[in-house]
Length: 65
Image 1 (spheres, rainbow, N blue to C red):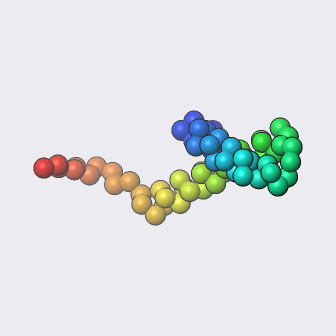
Image 2 (image 1 turned 180 degrees about the vertical axis):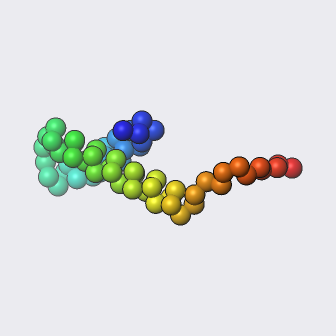
């Protein structure tokens, strides 16, 4: 698990649950785990797509100024 994505996935899951709680009522542990897993997978897919679209340039020298 990519530790850098844990906090953003938790924030996404919490917001989704906050918005859906009035509609569905009680939120169980299973619902929380599922929301987190979906958010995490979505972030992983986004990172993968971003890396595919913009691969890092190896050996590049950047001059500033």
